[in-house]
Image 1: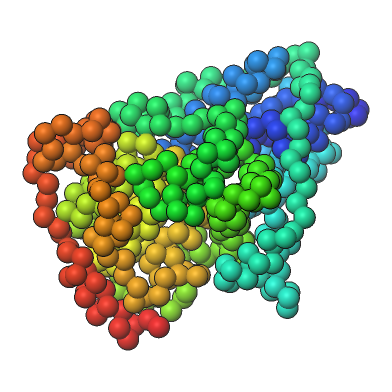
Image 2: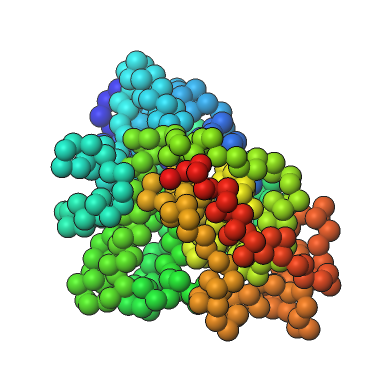
Length: 473
């Protein structure tokens, strides 16, 4: 292969042109660049909302590339086989991609790299999905961090290179390989009618992600310490969905946060900590991959969780009909927007695992199906933090009281009124949209009475402490 043979940019969770080392490397070879996305068996395992959101992210990236005079090639199948086909069709001599870090993605990428190199094809992977490669952050004794705060202190002052600019040109090949049609993939099929409800709330694409970050840094970050806990306000960055699909890089977010901190915006430090909390999740997923599917604290393996996902109490939780208003409002927010406020995530997870004594993996799987900002490492660590089985977890005896939490963080109940329609003469549009988003089989209506609690706050705390006593420490 000559140095000017085409280079394939294997698109994955890096749906952006700026600060994309894999794309930059492909362009630097000097020949045509062919962007290729392969919908592989791991994508088939995504939940309904992430599949839809990935499809829409690909649609927006495709439009961005077309505006630059190039295009996105879509293939479906095993990545190595599909990449080999594109190489045969185009004479490409190089494939570059951004690394991912779960066991399944690492195994897939190792296979692809070995196969391409055996074929004599240049195969290179690059950082970009994280600030730090998980194996590069170590304790003073050379181990990995098991507690967040020491890790934060170790990286807080780290030198992080500035983000790369988008390539000035994206040379197109003389002849394009065949491509699937995105609509034929029907990425929103599993969302059913919910896709139309969620779509207006999604913030899709690199351009919108950049504007979202700018608005956050300009208008919100100064008070982020306070506003991030108030679910009725637009008080967070809302960048989780864009980070999940790589429509913005963590490095871009980091440097924006650093500039805000230098300008004296008090909440910037907390924003930077949140970025490192995401890093911590991947740090642990790399070093202790059991966190993704099993109790990180193995002493929890014998805990007698309810494992019946169809238990009436679990069904009430899924339907946003527990009778606990903070829990129900947060669940309904998820069905309408595809996201959930972080304070709500803690409350609904605590209620499921502690008040209802239900295995955290049931909640993890449900979020994986319903969230457009689903992230494998962050989702797992968040659930285990709430359940008590994970690193830096809330102590087993700490049981969030969802009623006092509501009074503290939503004192005028504006958040609840936005999302719960039952009993109101003029419900908010978002509260009514919930009934259009959820499965028809649930047979829910805003004219129903609001339910009594399936398990009250006080009863749930007592049950949880009795169950935990003597079983975990």
